[in-house]
Image (cartoon, rainbow over all chains, first blue to last red; front, top):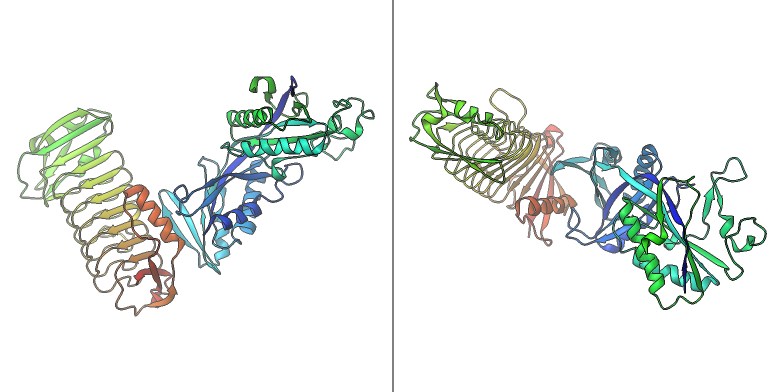
Length: 294
Length: 268
């Protein structure tokens, strides 16, 4: 029997944007998207959190080619702008046959083609379709098509839950199952490698310059040493799934399907508890109570 | 929301200036106060048209019984749909801002001149100067789209700055002359001097261009822009422009003007 701890996950407001990447085939769209989302696991040191939201068929993309929808989150508008521009320029524009379009619309514009067009050195061409401007930048495999602006929207970062168990194999199997199911939920991403994080953090540190440090309460190696360890003697492993989303409901849904998948799976042997990163209200205003989700 | 139906009471034999019809605000009852000019004399709208107002799920002005003497319909049109069930005169949709104009007949000159937004659909033909500057002005069509199912006359897209023109039938001479930007799609034949003095913009031809004196050959190209355009036409106008197998050649010019305009034409 897996225990659901009476606690809550604590999340915080972020700035977000959605981009649509297309390419000649889904393989190259994935390569461009993975490159864009590389080194974007946590705002603690990456500047942004990004991930692939869903795969899009040729009917769902502006240019009729297969593509991917990606979500990117950051703490400030300026950082979001900087990350989107740099990553688009260095990771998408460089990828063969790629094109990039905005996947949402709002009043807050983020320069995309509007800045990248200068790479065309005067040979760039602007096209205006359906009240949107697209830039055609000449590149060595033809043209890189890029929408003039991406758009900023509100997001929520840091939705999470922890899976506690007595061995790494069982816990990893369980969270992998949960991640697979959670990846089907729209409007959310799981920014960490494979959707899973082992180095969960708490707010602050004993060292002045660090904004985050290891979540010692859940480190099995500190059981007995750390004063407030939350692990009993049988718990030797904890893995966390972090969820960023563009609204509260979809983060709740993702958490619910993830936890339910673990509870309903046959490979629960070795899993003892499901908990969540609760920082006592220091981290943010969004609280996701685990008991309410299930 | 309202549907206003106007039926002409007479056959117009002199010029009828319908510019003031664009003052119709679907929210207010001002239609009876609108004056129109017939043979340069002012008349009340109801003297020439039978007016009917109905509740509807969208704002629509439907006019029937007009002919080629009825000018300036849809002038600065910015809201709702204007549906014309017969032929219409010159200056249709001039300086149009937004909304939609649908003409079931043919039009005279200067369709969509100086328009900045909105959509014009012609189910039949248009004469000269489609999307061109108004007489005395320098910049042609500056946004929006014009879809012509039939033929179009000379000087289509003259000094065009922005927007899309699609012509399903033949087009006359001097098409896209001095074009600044925008996109023109020509399904059938076209006259001489195509793209003369073109600075930027795109012309997409489904028939091979015979003389390319002022354009350089940039080789075979299946620009992604064509796929984007195709998808846009399919979504907005339910029109399939190209198939995935279509191949195009790209020409760049007018080189005598240091132009960067492009002509795509379909090759076998």
